[in-house]
Image (cartoon, rainbow, N blue to C red; front, top):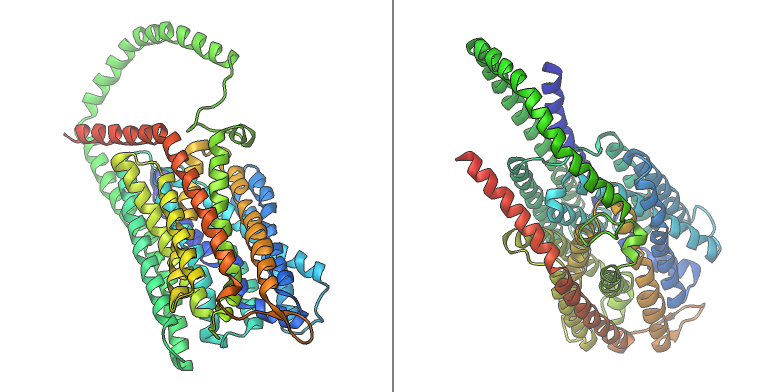
Length: 563
């Protein structure tokens, strides 16, 4: 008994310690969104046109297409192995880019650079798959908050890397790249030790305790986001101030460790009181237990015969069910092929493309968009997109979960709201009024974050958790596909059509006209995505009503037991 109680104490603490390391992994796995921070260095060093530079960005996103390998591996390999593969890929991919930008080696041929950017992009799919699949299985009764927190830190990671580099290295592209190579590798090594798949909450009390801890994680994340945003508005901070900022940021990122410490102390205290109560009960009631045991022995034959009679028709029904194999209904576990044969999967897939594809186009081209509109320093817009993307992710995850529990509102409707708001943001940037880039970057960041955070639990609720790793990575194919369509083709071709050649190769464009047509087309795509999300919300209303009724009945049962 002593060993069992000790293991239950360490189990609770280890579960939350694993989630803390998962948060750290997500906080450094958004390096795919930082391309704008060093894209100008690559463009000038390799004498690239805007189309060639955008295709390099597409190569980075194409790495995510090979996330199917991570999805397949998630059902066959343990979490530590998946994390190790991702960390090594990132070290090689970003390490090679650092060698080029720092001029330690001569610029590689264009096709070789595409391969190393692809490696760097693929590394995050292994990290994200390991973290998301494991944590959603561990906390399946709180999928929205889990997705919001983890995806939120992915959104913050761009600002974390950007502001740390600005604070410590004055925005030097070479030093920024060495951070992208080394820091994720070190953090993944820590997660390898602690992140494991564990049983989910089994009672309403455990579910409520999880919700309280998730509120703490949300609060810390908001503090980190506000802190990063405040630093971005400080003009020309001194070296000492920048160092202090970096130290405080690292302390804030480490502060969630208080949750597993509290969980350990609470479990240890409860088990200690339980031990004392068990000892007293054993002393006071030994005869009563013996009488109950004798009664159970006498009643057991009668119960066994009754259960045997009941089991016979049940066995016949199960045999008939096996013989007539049917397709799984929405809400049950689907294989990837079963999911892809449903209309709901493709509605979710295409609407996801409209949201994340257009959002990626803005993030990948933010450097050139800012320069075209007359801003010499675009790091503020990159950080704002990242930070407001975080707010979109973390708020939408918790809010969508709350309204499922309270009213059974379908999660895809939140995606619909984000799509129409994103279309408004693109129209604002197309008009190019003074300050429109500030407003547009905030709106696009929020809506892109909502799209990522809400789609993850939606997929798990519609198609089950058994093959979630692979289904998730099929949906993530929209990242390279959207990057190619909206960033590589649409933005690259239309920008080059408006740009003028520069001496020595390459081109440049200054003025609102450079990206106006791009923004208008992307606004139309978002309107299409809005219609698809509304349709999916209508089609899945029944499954979300079932989730609502199931959770409501469990709460009522728990309340009646307490009475």
